[in-house]
Each structure stands twice: as C-alpha cells, then as structure tokens.
Image (cartoon, rainbow, N blue to C red; front, side, top):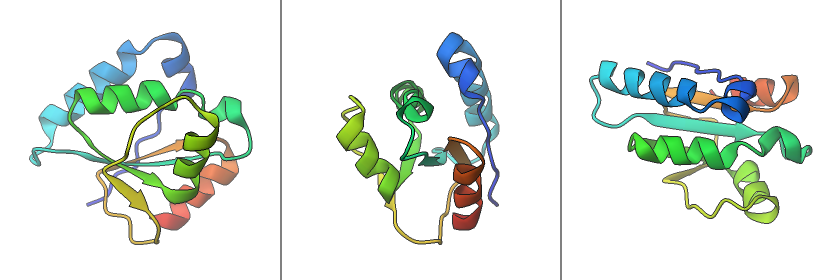
Amino acid sequence: MFQIFFLPLSYLCKDTTYFRNTGLALYKQMKSPQLTFAIFGNTYQLEKSASISRIISHLRNIHAHIAVEESFYEFIKEHIDCPFVPDEIITSHNVSANFAISLGGDGTFLKCAEFI
C-alpha cells in the first residue's frame, strides 16, 4: 500500500514540532519496522527546496528509509549544504514507499504523482 504524505513547508520553516510529532506518530502506527519516504523536489527554485536539510534530519531521527528522486538529489548535492547519502536513488517509475514528500509547486506534485 502506498500513502501520499504532504507536508506544508511553512511547518518546517516555522516549527519542526509538527513534523517530528506527526512522523513519530505515523512510525508507531505502522507495522513495518522502517518507513520508506520518497522525496521529490523542485530543481529550478532553490527556496522551494531549502528545507530539505530539516526533513532529512527528522527522517533520520525516526530511522526512516530515505529514497530521493535522482535529479533532485543531484540538485541537492550542487546547491544545498545538506551532506547526506540517501538509502535509495529513485530512477524509475516503480517507486515503493510508505510516503511521498513533494517539495515544490504544482509541477513537482505532478512529477511525484507520475512516479507513483
């Protein structure tokens, strides 16, 4: 089963408690010992992807499996100070994850939907 998880960027920019509490509550509810999050992001507007460091930090805190779409990961490496190696690079449209996070606008959301 695949669930889509949409996280308003305003929560991450102003208060990380929302994500931490929501993520931990979801983690406790799932039967699987490790959640998989697929992350898709905007590669054209830096400000829309600037919260990725906080997202990665919180996902690591709940021991999540992190999958990042390939072009977004390349963008992160080039433009954002977020040194991390994802557990998986998404290169095809066969995404297997518990949740998807889309950082961007309508186009990024549609790209995310296309992959899942």
